[in-house]
Structures are given as C-alpha cells and as structure tokens.
Image (cartoon, rainbow, N blue to C red; front, side):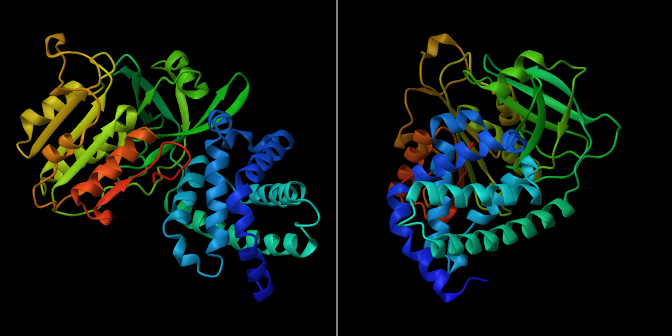
Length: 387
C-alpha cells in the first residue's frame, strides 16, 4: 500500500513520463534484455526494433501513474497484460527482474536530481503494488486453465502467405476450452534459443484440438521458422489459450471486419456464431489480392450453408476479370461499412488488422454513429493508441 506522500510523488512524475516515457522504457529494455537472458524468450525482438514495445510500455506506465490512486480507471488494461503474460508463461520470479531494471532505468535516465531516493522508493512501492495485482490475477487464470499437453502440428496452406497448423494432443487428452477471439501461446526452439509467441485461434473450439493460422512476416523469426521447418510429424509446446478480445454473448447482428491476417480471430467468432444460430453475421474482409486471400473457400462454403451470413470481400489490387472472390476493389472505404452495418446501427462490431487500417475503421464507425461501446478491437503485438 502506497503512502500519501508516495502517491503524490508518483503523480508528480506524470509530466516527465508524458515527454520522456519512451526514452525511459527503451533504456529499460536495453538493460533487461542484455543482462537477463532468461527473460529474452518472452519478448518479440521485431517489436523491440520497431519501437512498438517500448511505446506500449511507456503508455502503460503513464496510465498507471496517472491513475495510481484510482486504479479502476485503468479499465481493461490490467486484464490485457494478464492475458498476454499467461499466454507467454510469465512467472512470479520474472517480476523482481523487471522491477530492478525499471528502477535502474528511472535513475539512469532521469538523473540523480530528479530520480531522488524518495522518487525511487515511491516507484518501488508502486511497482510492488502492481506486481502483486498481476501475479495474483495470473495465478487465478493459470489455475483455471491448466497447461495443455504438447500438440502435433499438421500444416495446411491457406494462401501464398498464410499456413494453418492443426494441433492435437499427442497423448489424446482433451484440450483446454477457449472463447472465440483468444490466442494460443507457443514455445519454440530456433537456432538453439527459446522463443515464445502467441497466435490467434482461427477455428471455433471443438474439444479435440486447436487451429492457428500464421502469416509469413518479412524477417519474422518465429513465422518463418513455422513456415519452413514445421512438418506433419512435428510437435509444438503450447500454453493455455488466453486473451480479452472475445466474442460476447448476444442476439444483435454481428459485424466482423478484418484486414489481412486479422481474419484469424474473426473466423473463430464467425464459426461459433453461425453454429449457434442466434444472430445475423456480416463478414467484411480486406486483402491485397487473390493470391494472399486466405480462407476464401471456407467463407464461400459458410455463405452457402448459413442464410444468416453475408460476406463482402475487398481486394486492394486486381480486377473482376482476375477471378477470385472479391466483391469490390481498392482501399477501405466508409461506403463498405455503410453496406455492412444495419441501418439502425443495432449491432456489435469486431475489427482487427494493421494499425492504420484499424484507425480508419474506428474513425469511420464513429462517423457513422455507432456507439463506442459496440465496437471491439485488439492489436496483434503491443497495444497502441488508435486516436
């Protein structure tokens, strides 16, 4: 529990975090990843190199400082962190490492005149408070979702860029259940080093296995390994499903909007909603061209089977004479959303894709008048602001 003086000190550091938070978190990661190899598997080096991870942490630290005396104002930020940690198997023994590196970064970046002993003591207390909350929440989630056994990997090519892996326990046991929209953590060994990643579950739960669908990313360590090295006889170590971007119960029309590989969690949502049969489903998907359009036959099959499904596919490049399954060509447009949303806007919208795509969708939904609480989204990788 922080004292009143410590709370005041934390809030007094907010202006510093607003202007220099990213420099602090960049230095923090430099210290931790260079001096503590045991935590390196938990972090995606591509996100480090792009700056996305330091930016996301800087925003999280800032929000925590701003609301240090009103933690409920953080909304679902803590839940997002907990789910990411569970999917990568962050353990209680990792927290002291993070705390020590964070305090050292504060002292080294801010300097002794700003990072006084009182400031360091206040941030140490604040970090202990946050660590206790997260460790407790992660224990609850882990206890309720025991780690499933390793799964055999059967790869299936979905497009020029995406391969699906069908994972079933090698010992025949049932898998841990999940909610559409969640992701699965993997532990890989690449070049003698442990690497951990999570990938969205792209098919509804069936009790027998999981499906993940992985896009080959240019320079992506894990995605290229999965595409090039995993065979039908391969076995992958998996962690329990996790994630807050999940399909909520309801009967209102459901609108699923995806860009590129963002299709993966929306596929699981659509499959579950269609099987349940309680709501109309509109599936709006954007992709570059016919060659990279994944799951085209799956959607066409669902459309033929389920009268409550409408699907609308947009190719960025190409023409109608190219074949394929496109209903339109070009960049995302507000007219596509007008075509997809019911006139009375009584619907729940879930969207996922590259950050600029999601920013456009969010702005367009607001411009059309959809209430903010009816729109749900999540980032692949570190969360960032869309506004």
